Amino acid sequence: MSLASNKKAFFDYEILEKFQAGLVLTGQEAKSVKAGHMSLKGTFVTFHNGDAYLTNANITKYPQAGLLPDYDPTHSRRLLLRKREIRYLQGKLAEKGLTIVPLSVYTKNRLIKVEIAVGRGKKQYDKRETIKKRDTDREIKRSLKD
Image (cartoon, rainbow, N blue to C red):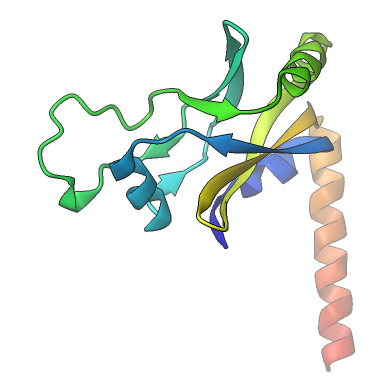
């Protein structure tokens, strides 16, 4: 079941490869995510000390959690990946023009997973082509429906 998605990533980036990673959350954050209070807007993946982190993901405070005076909704959260996947992604990040963005957050059994992707930024003319293609597909569907 999908909990949050980053639709802008498909528009801004050409997706090359996808990976699945676990997400380390506190108890109240997990409840908040499962309630649908997460935003992936402007989120990206960084690496520190051999670990991958989801940076700038906004998880609002769970209302029934009580007092959490120093809770930061956008702090970095650790991603659970294999060491060889982390090394591979770090190599891809070092290449010019490539970045790692999260596509969606979903549940698998009881666990919360993140789908991340290696992407290359689209140029403005590529975005215009995407918009034109979407509009023509919409017109074709409309004409077939009538």
